[in-house]
Image (cartoon, rainbow, N blue to C red; front, top):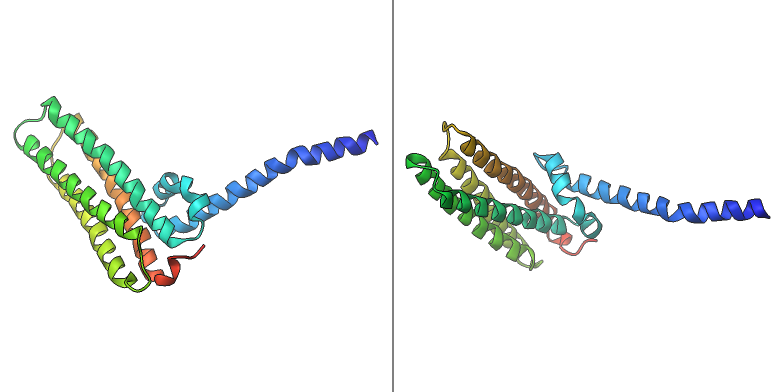
Amino acid sequence: MMRMNIIVTFIFLSWPTNLAISVSHNGKRYVEDACSVTHYRDLCIHSLASFSNTAKRNPCKWARAGVSVTISDAKRVAQYLIRVKKQGHMRGKNRVALSDCIECIQDSLDNLHRSLGVLRKLSGRTFDAQMSDVTTWTSASLTDEETCLDGFKGQKGNQIRILQSQVQNVTYITSNALALVAKLASTGAGSINSP
């Protein structure tokens, strides 16, 4: 009897742990499946893993998550660029490039916010037109970010390298969001309410 109680207790205590491992394994599979269409897969998995339990296999939710994460990162970079400008260490051509870069990132954010707004209210009747707009705006965001980087081409210095790294990372995340948007567009209006 004592041995039976020990076995039952052991099974009971290990059951929730095994369940948690199973759930997290499924969540990992969801994000890996979603990110399979992206160019920067590891970054996608890392940045979107927390959405696994809600997005599951829904391309609409993954596209929204991708754009949301991109907005957060672009905001962080915009704040960083504004701080760098206020410090006043950049002079001449680099200062002009920095001002242009800030404007480009702000334009990128505007386009990303437009995209997220449409992704939140997709409709079966206007799905194709809506997705055309979202694809255009997300693509324009990526172009804005790349334009920012172009202004610093060939420039040297530690601060320039850090700035380029920050903006480059946003381009990777935006590229991933664009891939998730393209996947949603290709799956069609039926994916709006899929589980």
